[in-house]
Length: 256
Length: 305
Ligand SMILES: [Zn+2]
Image (tube, rainbow over all chains, first blue to last red; front, side, top):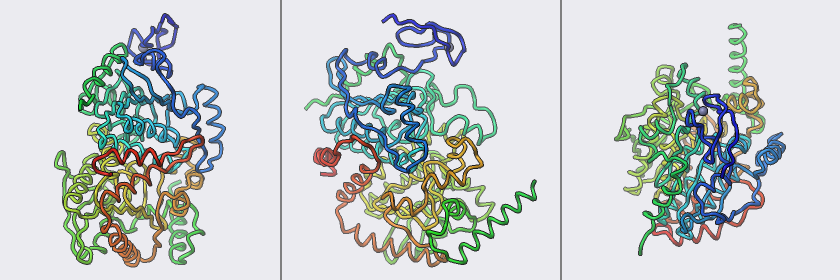
């Protein structure tokens, strides 16, 4: 792939040529990837089969403007909602994957995201295939009120079922992973990986600054900070993603 | 300016007092009225209900890892000869306690204490009763450093499969993930004037309505009252609010009635029922039937077959 394009890096403000991995050569900022770009990093070519592609959000608390907001985001992002799930192979080994997209309403988790993540996990529990989830989310989808909060319960309780069926659950946290996603399935992986420099936390940086009345220390809530505090297992470069996932899949396969 | 604020506050207090004294029907109250009532100082909190319900209560402290969080109360109580583990958010009954309890906003060690006590209850086959009353988990530096997200996530996972009966009562503010962290059980009740929401109306107003002063409007739009949540099927029932003693008596009756019923069931059945209930929440179009796959997963487990 030589789709080198000139982009303005939001972190260092330089105009940069981003290579196939979409990383700023000056500050190592990891640009968000589309679902296809993400899959290209780790999935065997052409192996991805989407699941539940027809699922759409409703308006459970009848909030004015939500349906328009959904349509607008569907048009803008060419996505149906903030997560895509399916099956693929990695080095020939079958896995179930879920890839969140921050581009769709900030990757917020409403009923569709909760349901699809849950379906992906149930699929893993039924087949025994490892489940690999990529997060990118600002948190719960407030437009769905209490139903969005309940998706935390739904995804976390399904993670408990993966525990019971001894199904591997691998998480890859990408920038940003905050709020209700962090406080549910994102922190429940058997192995939790993160991309370099990703913001990972519960409360958003601005909310914390509002509470403490001062600026946050440099690097607060970044992947490197979470690694130091013991909440993630490893930080993985995009170029090492396939190799790392292959190793994990290999070492988590149960032999009868 | 300050006087104006004071006057608004005074009017609000009078308005709320009149609502309480007239004992108006629930339907007559607006969502915003409930928000104010749920936050009203002097409203009985977890500690007060525990002492009104229990014959004896012994508080147990600490998460065995970092510290003891005063914003989360926990311990063992006896209710008519039955031993029960109680867990609750604690806001404090006066200003000094409010400050020491961080206004009911727990740090990770609060959730980890709750988890420890829940596991302890499970070990001894003791039921768990949770009283929820928090604006949310504490959004501070230490809280993040010690993994508030991980702590809540862990609670959701463990409470959903805890093999002992769990009853949850939202007695005041049910604020987001901080409330959910001790809010998963076999039964979820709300006091009539309690609220339960994904974000505060103030937060909703400033983020979605782009105007922090529209909290009242936000409260209506969010559908966060006990009445709404019952309609949504998120809670099992509403408990009428009377005098604190009367309300405590209603809660106590509910606890005894439910435990008589739930304690006779095999714990695996409780967990399966709990997981099915949680699994069904959410509204999507073009979804597929989830019931059968879930039953198949149960069949594959050791514990919930
Ligand atoms: Zn840069």
